[in-house]
Amino acid sequence: MRHNTSFWLSVPIALAALAPLAVLVWLGFSAELEFSGRTAEILLNTILLTGLTVLTSILVGVPLAFVMAYADLPGRRFWLAALAAPLAMPSYIGAFAYFAAFGGGGELETLLGIATPRLEGLPGAVLVMTLYTFPFVMLTTRASLRNLDPSMVDAARVLGLSLPQAMRRVVLPRARGGIAAGALIVALYTLSDFGTPAIMRLDTFTRMIYVEYNAFGLERAALLSVYLLALVAVVLWLESRVSAERERPGRTLNLYVKPGHLILLVAIVLSILMAALGLPLGMFTVWLLREGAAGFDPAYAWNSVHASLLAAIAAVIVALPVAYATTAGRAGRLLERATHFGFGVPGIVLGTALVYIGLQLDMLYQTLALLVLGYVLRFLSLAVGSIRSRAERIDRNLVAAARSLGASPAEAFRRVSLPLALPGIAAGAALVFLEAMRELPATLMLQPTGFDTLATYLWRVYEAGYLGYGAIPGLLLVLVSMVALVVLLSGEERASL
Image (cartoon, rainbow, N blue to C red; front, side, top):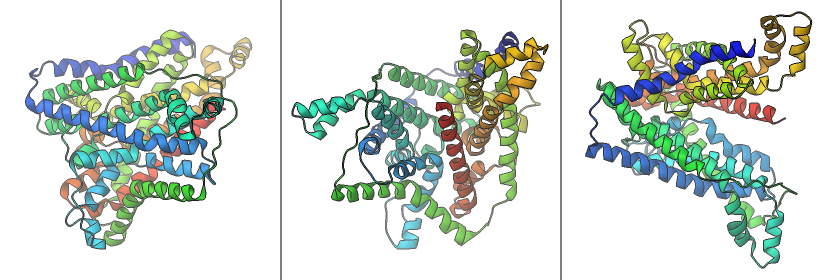
């Protein structure tokens, strides 16, 4: 495939990726542009949820990052993997379990006789979001800490600072880039999350966009989407103001942990894991034993697999020209950035734009094709990134040799470049498939009538109040999320080799 061919094929793809943004802006500004007290309340709730989640994720993630980076713990790699495991559970799964467990008549009271307050509103949403986002801060901060020169700590100790003082005054400021990177991911995740605020009954932009959509207020939903995108832009701008330290690391700093402190650390880690993983998995296991497969139709799983598989195939086909155009120069990289729009904005925002497009095209509205299109636009950047990282490692001399032997550009691409890029294509398809399987808000808005997936069936169970029926879809979604995390981490490890 010649680079100019891949570039021109990428242009309409980039325009299609940006089309939902244009639709949202046009549709939003056609609504009434008032900023009412209700809108101010939604804005305040969204800002409070995002800010408090970022703060608590930093308070939990940064100390754990120091421990995982520097403490001489037995089985440190195991503990690191265990603390990253909450990323394998969508936050709405955790919210579903916590909503069912706490409060009068909740599972904790039914099973153990323990009276607990209802967990909802801002405190409940912050708790749940923190449990499933702190690993972002922990991992990025740990990576930053591992890249710092430990001789600075030695110098601080020689000058009379205690170890805690050296960590606080010397190391922590130099790790601000990693902390900021994790905080950015947490903020964007929180702003885009629909399931947790909705289940915890907190009126944020994502929840109210869905309410307006269900009330046939599509223009109002679009206007709220524009407000939400403005918040996303502010978060991205704030993160860009934080610079990271670049150092040449020397030896790895290893700190001895006293037995008493080790016991305390293990107790803290186990408490976090029980809260993030133990309670939800325990709830789903209890429901599975109690309810069995009551209310669950295997068609829900098939619908998830069917739509996600179509999206994965379509995404890698569309991603191929974009990925190869990216390797050709700056213009191709600009086109690639356009594909990031879908993954960088909340799924409910993308869903709002595509619902309007579907209403203008009767052949698309409430069809499987529109749902698959939504998945492709939402996760296209995952496929592009995976294929591009593989394509960049292909030896150009092999393609040149094929051309010198008489192969046409198309034949050289088909017989040389494409086979060498197959691992990246497979990884990209797997990521799109797994992410589409657990996507909730876009699926709720774009699904054909009667076409429930695992995620939407779990949502219907919540709305109907039959929480025990959520065992099978909940456990299956956790399994899918675990596989997605393994694929993502293994892909990053291969890319670093």
